[in-house]
Amino acid sequence: MVPFAAYLRTSTDDHQSPADSAAWQLRLAGQLIGPVGGQIVATYHDVDQSRSLPWERRPEATRLLGELRDPNRGWSDLVIAEPQRAFAGNQFGLVFPVLVHYGVHLWVPEVGGRVDPESEAHDLLMSLFGGLAKAERNRIRHRVRVAMAAHATTGRWLGGRPPYGYTLRELGPHPNPDKAAAGVNLRCLEPTRRRIRWSRASSGCTPTTAWALRPSPVS
Image 1 (cartoon, helix red, strand yellow):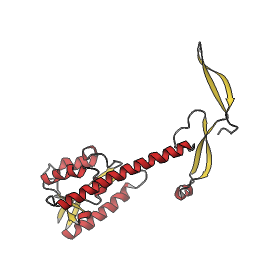
Image 2: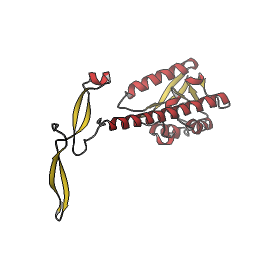
Image 3: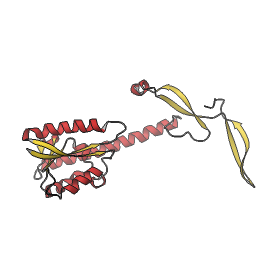
Image 4: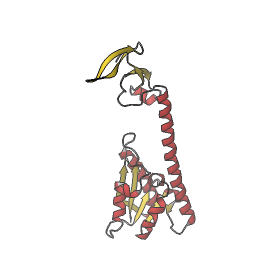
């Protein structure tokens, strides 16, 4: 039996179950190391940690790196079920030499087993996955920002407390079928019936004039 440690990462805990995420990652890792008699004896699972964070800023990854120095850590190899979750940008090039220094073999499905530190093909492949992970994160961030800006220009409510002078108006079921089935409706911002104009007086700011913006009910 070869003792393995497994590193897992779940990006968010509000849109997915950390337990389910850990289960499929451990299952995939077990399928990879099973033919060589590998058995996972330690698990390091970062939850709600961005892949853009270096390993030294992720709690479980930091704990893993710290235990590399312990010769009695109880495991000799490390398996990662999905490198895109573990490495982004140049992180592989920073972490892998540390693993090699302490004699820990890294196993990933993308190379079909152990990553060979002397193989240029393995190094290129792992660096490629890191670049793809970084590009995917940047693409998602850009897409979300553009979508939110487009929604804001049409008066769509993006969450939080409505600004002063506005109320929320229901627009009907959410276009996402799952959210609509859960009873979620779209909302937009609409000016309230009346606003108060403030002017500075000698004793401070006092309401002086009110005027109608739109004949819409106040919720």
